[in-house]
Every structure is written in structure tokens, then in C-alpha cells.
Length: 257
Image (cartoon, rainbow, N blue to C red):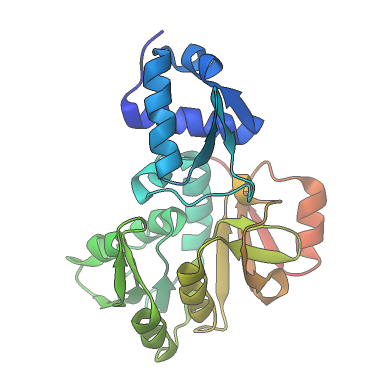
């Protein structure tokens, strides 16, 4: 078996544990083709990041069923689905608009598709979204300040919320950790406050969610689904859930590649 790099291996371990709920160290060693000692070190690191919970001999998914790992981890997860969703979301933006983009990886994929849509005003709290537009002619770029989060590579906190509340944009695009038929959720209070403020900054609100985040909950309620103007998901979402969501908001299923 070809051995993956450390980051890729840990992503595979995390995905396996989340899919199955629990896994032994021995099973993960067979899955990844590395020693049990290496697996234990990986599990220690994933627990430190808040991705999973260790127990004697293995690991389990967190009780909340979701987690918010570091940005570099999230960038490598469900990339095809995120690209499909991003392509669909980008079609909602026209030259001359003002758009507010959050710090999610799906919205980052959307941002990369908007670079040639000048003139455009872009408002964001995400450092990597700033990098996308920093050298683009015809783009008015407004960076939202606040307390820097290394986990999210973005700015959060009261200063960020206050900066958002001073603005009104044509369209806001956000993502979050979990969503069921009635409510969107996130497990971090600081993130919830920023995303709520963003959603309130525009009458045109778009939520981007890949199917792994659906039919899940987290600690904090972010917003009712009925308050989301448009929900974009990828193919593979459960039909029953989609029907429930469509009773409350507009839903678009993004086609694959």
C-alpha cells in the first residue's frame, strides 16, 4: 500500500471515524498502512485539534457530530463538491455588485471564480479571500478587522461584527458546520456572531453547504432555514431532507463536474 503524507493520512483517519462513528487503532493502521504507533500519534493530534475523541484502543466522532478543524484540513475535504457548489453560487454575482464573503472553504472556492468579474466590491473577514483579490484591478476590497483566528485564518470578535453592521451589500455568501431541515448551526460562538451579522447585512443571502454537513446539528443555532434566501447543496443530499428544506427556502442542487 502506498503511504499518504501525514496530513492526507490524518484526513483519511478523520473521515473514516466520522463516517463510522468509531474505529480502533488497529483498524486505522490497516486502513492507512502505517504502524499502530503512528496511528496513535495521529489520533493524539486529531484530538488536540478537536476533530475526534480518543478512547483506549481507538477513537470516536465527537458527540456534536461536527467539528471545525483548521483551515488547511478543511481545504482538502470534499473538494469536488465544494467546487460544484462554488460554480453555482458564482453565477449569482454580476459585475458592479457588492458581495460579502465569509471565511469558509466553500466560499473561498467561490471567491476564486469571481476574480475576473470587475467592477466588483468584495467585503470579507477571510485573509485568504483578501489574497485572492488583492492584486485585481477593478475590485474594491474591504477587509473586515477583528481578533485574528489562526484556526480559521480570519478575523472574528466584536470589532468584526461592528464593522459588518456598518455595511449593506447586494449579496452575502456564507457556509456553516451543520444544517437540518429547520435550522443552520455552528459550534463556535464567535463564529456564529460574525455569520449572523453577515446574513443581516443583505436581503440576498446565500448559504453554501456540501452534503456532509446536512442532517446534522451543532451547539449554537445560527439562523432558521426560512431566513436563508437561497441554499446551494451538492448532488447526493437525501431527497426527504431536500423536500423539507424546500418547504422553507429556495434550494439549488449543484451539478457535478
